Amino acid sequence: MCWFRRFSFLTAVVSNAVAANAQDSAGPAPVGDSLEWMLAVSVLTDEQSYEHANAGLYLAFRDETWFSLTAGRSHAPSAEADIRAGLVSLGIEHDFGPLGFGLAAERWGDADNLEAEDWQGEIFFGDERYRVALAVESRAIDIYFSGAGLVPIATDLRRASIDADGVGIDWRFRIAPTWRTYGSWMDYDYPRGIRLVPRADRLGLLSSSAVTLAYSFADRYETVGFEHSVERMLINFDFSRDRSAIDGTKLRSVAASVLWPLARRMDLEFRLGSSRVDGAGASFYGGLTLLVYGGG
Image (tube, rainbow, N blue to C red; front, side):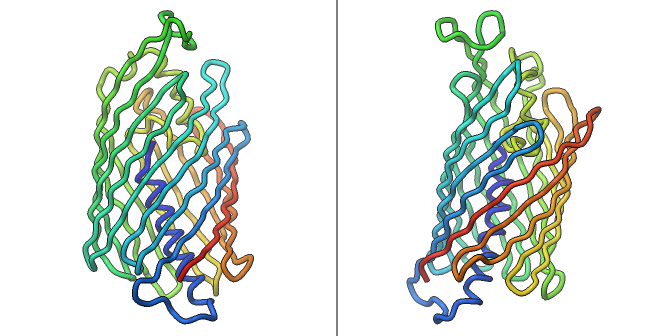
């Protein structure tokens, strides 16, 4: 549900990976009305069998306009609310230089538990050395429950609707020829009565894993990281902290990733991290992302 975090991170990966791929290409640099594309396929899991998989197609026109189409699915296992959420998102970003804008829409959810729509807009400014983006987001969430407030029964289904608005900032700075720092902050305004919505507490399990955190009811998150390039390899270290709107618990995560070339137009990223929820032990998670490039 936190589209801003996912898209901002992927935009950074895509931009840097495409740049690295282009530098290594034996062909001429793209000019004029060239069209580049990238396909990204990711899988992520943790010790508690939380799972996430998605595929995204990214199109870059003259290195000024980006289109993105993403589809995925996540699984958060629990005896109280076994959630299998699917998502579809569409985004566009245009860079006028040095100003630009981005728009996105996303729909995700589990027909037996909850469904949500996110709409977001952002304005950014910067160049190849830095980028700062200001974003606003609007959410419409429907939670389904039975008359008893337990796992929904198809013949006795009720719905509770929740609306929330968010504001945030995202940044990236080049601090040395081979080093960058990046981060983001987002704050959401949920209704005070969200804790009283039937089944909201059980859906709070989405906030207990870094794998499904993007689908959670986090009312605030913060991320800071560093990226280092070694020839065509990209090494990332990041730290994030999230707070649940349902019970106020915090999830802290530390992760590292390495992206390296498999072929002339194919990269692989390996990510490993550890997350800890208030009052619980650490949980480890990991994943792979395959990047395939074309065009130009």
